[in-house]
Amino acid sequence: MHAKRQIILMLILLLIYPTLLTGCASEKVATRSDFVLDTVVTITLYGTDNSDLLTAPFEKIRELNDKFDAFSENSEIAQINAAAGKEKVTVSQETFDLIALGIEYGEKTQGALDITIGPLVTLWNIGEKRTGTVPSAEDIESARQKVDYRKVQLDKENRTVYLEEEGMALNLGAVAKGYIGDRVKEMLTEEGVTSAIINLGGNVVLLGGHTKRQPFQVGIENPLDTSSENIGVLSVRDCSIVTSGDYERYFTDASGKRYHHIIDPATGYPADTGLHQVTVIDDQSARADALSTACFVLGKDRAEALLKDLGVDAVFVTTDNQIIVTEGAADKFTFNSTAENAMYEVEQ
Ligand code: AMP
Ligand code: MG
Image 1 (cartoon, rainbow, N blue to C red):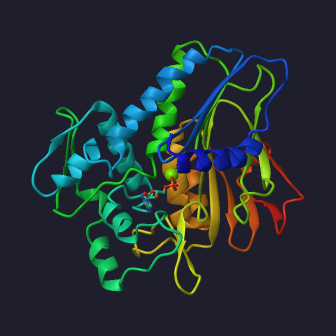
Image 2 (cartoon, protein in one colour):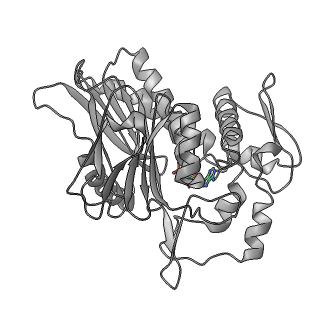
């Protein structure tokens, strides 16, 4: 492994470790961490110490990443993007299904989630460097004109994907980890594993509970200071917990203003809707991932209305440091009253 990556891996492990508050000295555990999907992925199995079970899931993660990564030259997504406005591309079932899910949630969120966000992601180039410059308003607008999930043509029977205009580009960054987490959970279930935590750089997927009776305890990062204490803990089993936040990837401009990686397709700029963080709790990780990004773009009020319609729960942290928990999540969430600067309010 690359030395720089190794340091990043160690640092991120230190950050992730306290967020998964599980453990019992005598139990059997198998665990493995690796740098994949541009982040640290950790899979921990409980009730077994057979670490061979971890080989196939990591292979699957790499295989799917190779298909989904828009910036990897030979990926299926790169092929679709290169053929934009020219021809349709036949893809694997997995790529087709993930794009279809992205389009479905584009529709459900009225375009707050838009997987054709590629031209804006490339233009802003957020997350590559610590400091950066804001693109010109003209460039932002012309990239924004290329973003429209309604211009993706899917042919289910022949498994083809076609982007209607040249210059359009898919970017599955908002949904890929969730989808991959679901596939890993399926694989482990098929292998007979009954208790596991799959942590894809903070996208957490839970298989079962910590024990038959005990749920898992999953901490929610403090968006104001990720190295400090969690803002609270969710006691949950057999579900996925996915967070989107303005502190995860960003650059600062010369004046010190921050520009983060979640872009509002309606403006072309990083979403500025009064939220620092949204954590979505749902059975399906792909859906939780799509919704966490969309809710961040929608802002608290519109996001709450959407989640109510869909029957999905979430924890919001606003830019004025309020923590708001949807009704269905209230009994699962324990606020950490020592977390700095936070007030606690349960939304009914
Ligand atoms: P997440 O961390 O799941 O919220 O996803 C953020 C990533 O999704 C970004 O790094 C971009 O690659 C991509 N992205 C940013 N804004 C959007 C958006 N409005 N819709 C879809 N994908 C987005
Ligand atoms: Mg997401």
